[in-house]
Length: 488
Image (cartoon, rainbow, N blue to C red):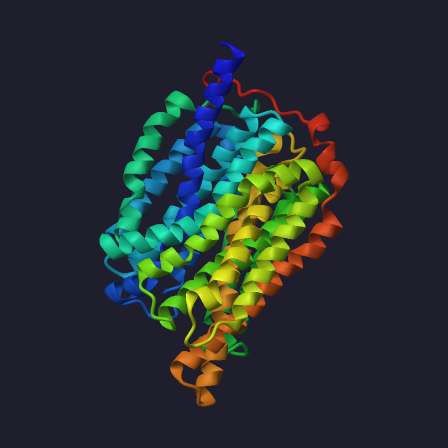
């Protein structure tokens, strides 16, 4: 096979993997504009509605590392297909849901499918492209899709809810996933680690994910029960105990889900800290901004989706420039610029009034935050994977996406709690319902903007220019090899 045809085959496979990745990111936010409609149709309580979003994000982030480990050991293409199958089946189940329990359960399984699928896809990308300019180009496109996928999800959700019904935001995944599933064996090369040791840290996955579920539950329900209530304190204590157990397990087992030694790579640690803040600020910004537009400004699902187009188009338009700047001035500075812009855009949104208008009050914050995602997603993707050896490819890719998705789940829980608490306080003080809601959303925007800006000192302290610049010389990534015969 000539080098030209090999290159064409790589990019063809990359395009298919990118579609799978795009589906998982879109589904993180596609339900946002449909939440009021879903809540009415399935009789959700006000406090449980956010779990349609957070159930997906928690299992997505919580089982990502286990998915990456399975991909490394059992074969990345095989695990990719397993994840796609889970994702499609859960999407169908979500579309057919008749109550809040069945929908939340389907969303959790959908997140599990994404957690299995995504690290396998990104590991294959890492193995197809040698570290350096070619991989940076691929990861630049990958990061651009991540930046645009969240807002494209909101737009698609608005269109489908308006013209077809909320069920079709889930039905849509079934034919796309079926086509991808049929093409993967023909187009995507397989690779795995050449090892006979295949141990899975299931206890680590259970304690880590369980601790995070309890933490999100405690934060999101605190406004209802009170921060000093026995229930809230018990949930927080149980969460702390499970997360502590997770760290102990990871430090002692032979094949840990998350080898703590990987954080000795300071650039990787800094990129994941930035990824956590990115998810905690931007994904939650979409959630809160959508609620403001629908509950205060009374936008329809379609109007809300179109409004977010300002963010998506800005992010897509600047993705090429972001990639160029990463090459010219380095990932570290571009990452700082991106997180600063996200923080600035979200904080600008704190001025939204009760009788707001898109052009006067929302367009500016949306554009600035959208620019920030273009300058943040791409360098974070590159920095988190720079210099990672082949045997840790699945781990590193899983860790990056875990940081972003868990950041989103925690950010939404924190923002919901802050908004609800402040709204209740304003109602008790005599404010009208629209004014109280607006005040609550403003307070949430302040917190989310601060989360984004907290990434800046972490980036300066942890991300090292020499680790980024020396990555090409240190690479051990090889071309994908056929799967070992008989290794199942």
